[in-house]
Amino acid sequence: TLTLADFSVTNFGRLGVSVSLGDQEYVFSDVWYVTKVIKQFSDLSELSNEKNARNTGYYILGNDILGEGSVLDGGVTTFWDQNKGFGGTFDGRGCTIKNFSVGGNGIFGTLGLGTVKNVNFEDVTLNEGSALLARTMYNSTVKDVTLKLTAFLSTSGECGVFVKRQSGTYASYSNIVVDANGCDIYNVLGQGFDVSKMTVENFVINNAGTITYFGTSDNTNDTPIEKPAGMTVNYKTAE
Image (cartoon, rainbow, N blue to C red; front, side, top):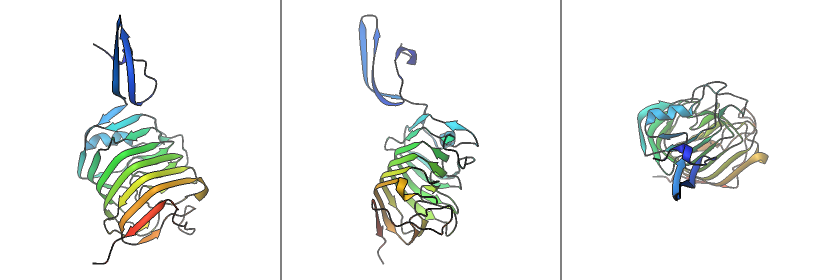
């Protein structure tokens, strides 16, 4: 019987590893070394943070998950500290989380030095004053993500599609596809978005109603930014 102690594993993620037992060497080409495999909606609560907490784990989805209309709201945001909140990796491995709504702090509360990748979100309601992933994000990456909205309910104030506040730090979005499903989007990228520190590549919004702001560069809605060069918007067609 092989246990984790038999492997020399120093990095999270998908690995190729080998182990020698006596005169035999065993090679494993597809091994996942992770903090937790998330298999049901209630497991997602482990991604949220309480104030001053820090989570640098590696989480993967083990299968598609049905939320059945439940609400995700990621604990208490840490506001202005990138070394708190979720600083690990959430890797959906191409799976889908479906049919849920999001509260004011999103799934994680705070993303600080974190990565969200390879995941699909479907039939999502973004409630008033909310964003899908987090209230605040610092120096983090979102890539290879799709989102299909059911509703975007914010019409003013602090909100966003993925994050409510970027906090003037590095933010990277790549290979993003949002199906707005005809919704009017008040703010796409959220507040505090420093255009000199952001990377937006292949970010596509389809079937959008109206878009009031693509983002703002301070923590109000007084300084709108232009649509980033790496973002494409396709508005819904008139019936």
